[in-house]
Length: 437
Length: 96
Image 1 (cartoon, rainbow over the protein chains, first blue to last red):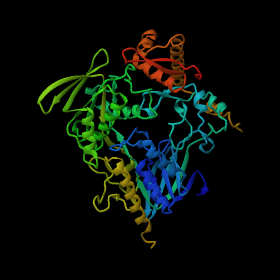
Image 2: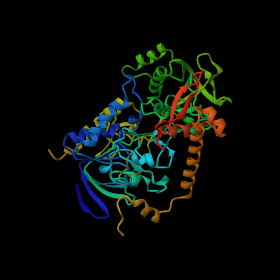
Image 3: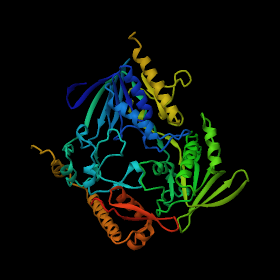
Image 4: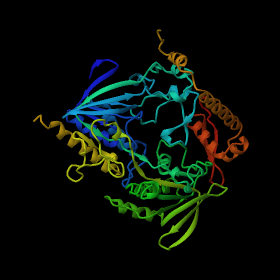
């Protein structure tokens, strides 16, 4: 619904949803099903957020992609939803009741998405290889690339920062959809309501140098292990990135960057215990001979079926050690020595493992508060979006007409994110109907 | 100026020269790719064997070799007798 073509394209929607992860997608879908016109703005090249990158979900061990893909596809095909990928909200001004003006900037993809068949011929001929951010740096990707096989839209993009402009992709493209003349698009969005679903960031373990992440190549993050366990994995099987060896003695270090005042994140990330237990179970399936040890402070198995899932891992042979890891060092063969406090025995011990997974915590995705110009979006003490009435109206924020969904308001698991997205859409509907009935 | 569809890279190249580090990175990848494919020409090899032959850090071999697996030029083969390292070979119908 383009009103006029000036420098900025002017668009009008009932709801602007900022963030196309599972919570934002749920909100958008519910609102669209009620007949509202929704604009979904996603900064990445694909919707689906972090969930679409996961292997399986706990405690059911259902395939994450099998749950996400149909939902993402429904969002993408919904007639009441417009999606802008590769786009960022730059400014939001509230002009009055049901009147928001939003500046959105969309970066050029250098591909006409509607014409791209996803044939990947451009990828085949592209001579460039750079680190693949969707595989968390464990493998390369081309400069002309489809983010991953179940990306939505499943269309190519050109990484212009790393492109040599050789033109091979254009020559190979059967539909001539690659277009290096594309430039940034600016939009002025007039929206009647806003849903903030900007998700979370993962803790960067480089901030704990004593764990050796980055220096010792056989230490990876839980998200890197998640990718290794996924069907669209970077390697042919689970391998040590340091030398390609099949690991047979893997350690998990829980609470890496969570419940740790020294790194500025004193709160529990709520999901690390359970995703580590899930990965341990999956690893025992993928590497039947491997020993898996989980170093934990407390196991927080609080949700439906979680404690049974924890007991199942114990029954499968996963070793749980109540211990705080102080330091990790590396042996010449790439194995790792974990120095830890055995909390139950009250002594300091050392143990050798051939691969270590750091179960990294959830941090706020800061920045969304800064785009609100004439009203203040309040944040909580941990920099997540403040829920102004958490018990009675959990999606409500400090700005009337702006609602929060999913992990933008704090750490939570997938079912809670979807519930939160549902709550945000219900409260947005209530706001949109205010004064119209 | 009318820009012909399918030949727009040339247009952008005139407006925005390619940074030197991008071309250097391409040269480096091409050199490594050739070295790995040459080393695998006659016989399949494990990552430590390739690292020793190419005098490259093992982690770099993992990254580059796995990229070549992804690009369809190399394929994993059998595992060694100790069940520790896979052998890798040039893909028989591999793309170049």
